[in-house]
Amino acid sequence: MVYILLIIVLTGIDQLTKYGINSYFTEGQSYPIMTEFFHVTYVKNRGIAFGLFQGKLDIISSLTLFIIAYLIFYFYKNRMRLSLLEKLGYSFILGGAFGNIIDRLFRGYVIDMLDFRGIWHYIFNFADVWINIGVILIIVQGIIEIRKNKEKERKK
Image (cartoon, rainbow, N blue to C red):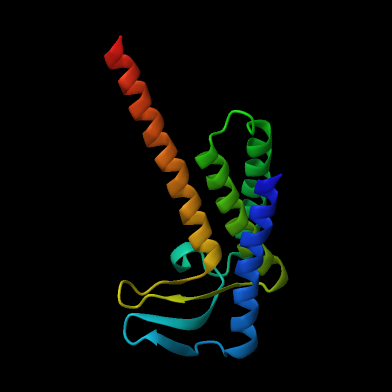
């Protein structure tokens, strides 16, 4: 299935970037790419999004594993009726979820490195990007469905 390959590729990209950061940077080290706008900065995140729930690794990991299992079940069960955008969306979400859970289980923290300090002060990683892309794709599909349904109602 092409979506399994996509999940593997996305997880691989995430893990390769984290491996590179872990190998060539020290924690807290920052390298400017676009002066004051974008840096690559090595941060160990022991929480979840935006640094919430710091140090609650057991709860976060358990919840993440449950969500991953549920998403795999849902994706497989509904694979024939999901739209292309939804299949891509769930693949991106799973690729990101696998990338971060690998960190939590094998490192005890998630490596973050994408530092858009020109926009905000949160630092994130490619797994986080994949999850956001997946959510956006699913929302776009929902909007498309709403518009289709409204169009059908108007034609009645």
